[in-house]
Image (cartoon, rainbow, N blue to C red; front, side, top):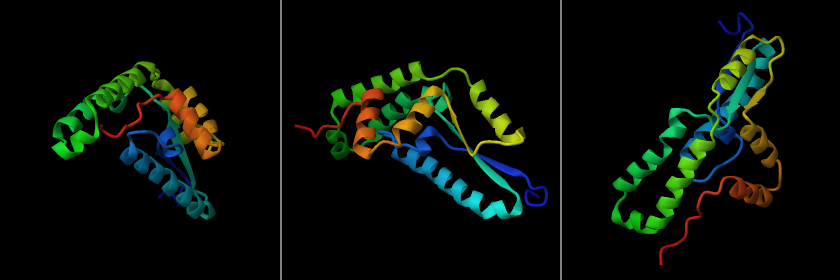
Length: 167
C-alpha cells in the first residue's frame, strides 16, 4: 500500500539514536538501530517513490524520563552482591539525583513532538530528520565534534557521575 500510494514512513527514534549517553546502553542501541533501519529503508524505498523520515526528540517529560530514577532503584534492588559491590552507594545516589535533575530540566511541551510528527506526515517537503528540542539540536552539533571532545562536552552538559572502582 505504501509503495502503491508513494507514501512515507515516519519512525520515532531519539537524539540518543545519534549520540550515545551514559547508563542507557540498551536504549541507545535500540535507537541507533531505528536510525540505521530508517537510513537503509530510505535508500531501498526511494526508487518506489516512498520517503522515510525520523523524529529525534530530546528529553521531554514522558514516562520513560519521569520514571528513570525508579527504574534504577529497582535494578539496584535486583543486583546480586558481586554486581552490587561494583557500584558504591554514593555513586547510585549521585546517579539517581542526576536522573531526577534531568527530568526537572526536560521539556514539558510535548506539542513540539506532535507538531514535528504532523509535519513529517503532511508536509510537501518533509525533513529527513527532525531534531526536536534545543537539547536534541545541541546534541546533534556536539556529536559532530571529534569523539574525545564530544564526550567531554556531554560530561559537562549532562554530568552523570563517573563510575569508580570500589575501594
